[in-house]
Length: 476
Picture (cartoon, helix red, strand yellow):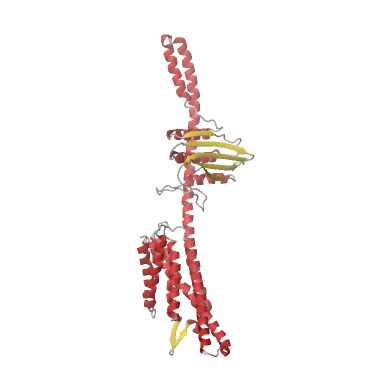
């Protein structure tokens, strides 16, 4: 009777720990709790009716039982959760492998507790004089051991699976077959070790059942050590996998940042050349028009007024070649001119109070990258706003600190990525986003500064980006 109750509780603990582990891998919805309870119940029933009846007398039978356990978990996941087969297979294999290898740590503890109980009983045997006392001692001893074992089993299962699910941060990301193979192989190895331990743990010699611990006492130490190391290998493989994914993403972003920086620098150089040509052309055209106007005023006769009006129109056209913003640097002049035109096309009110910092503490290309990316993001966000659309840019100095502040209206939800501290894009087009803000942050940190993002308002929200840069002599 005790054995059946013990098996019952083991099945319950496995079902509970498995359910808690599994539901962390799938998106939450209203039916999440109901599916969790259904999975627990069904897995408990399958353990009791199928797995408990299977023998492991041979390697093939041990492998068959482990495979059956994986198929049961996989089938229940397929029934209750999504259809991403490789993901389901990883969850099933990792769960069964962890559950099985943890049992051998529990077996060692159980064996040790049983030996301790025998030692205590040998000292107390003189005080046990009746069958009632013997039954009471047996009952208390058995249930005390089982309580410790079950609590430890639940604690190890919960701790191990909680660590794995916490380390596996990219659960929603679709993986390739090779990536899932990298994740599954350590768990498959762990499962093979557990099957091997099952086969060699108990043997019969001369009609007497002998355990591995009886034959080789040192295994009382080495079995739990090997099991713990295997669990650590599984955790380390997932941690390593996540680090490799992060490094790969960082490498992609770094490449994009470099390409964008090079592209912006080339565009700024072209703008600077165009700006210089336009200023020269504007100066020459004004001189030519003044000369033509002087000639017309002397020789035009009856058509004088008509020609004068025409020349005034030409002067107006030439004046439009001049930039409306005088920031102190031709590149930042050109950037503000271009972004102001882009804003007007989207019917966004654009206000700018920007002055390029004195002397040469900053590379103009870094300032250009900050302005270009910040205003581009602001125009895109304000353009999607319903109602008033507005962008304001200003710069100011406090001591040796130079600040650039861009404020714009926006609508929709706003949240920050916990790892990067940057806004999470709401776009679903599959393209990388947030590169502009990362470029701004990189430029700010180049000058021992940083970037700050705040959001104000509830109905009409305003997004405020503040870039702080410390004045220094720029060195190539």
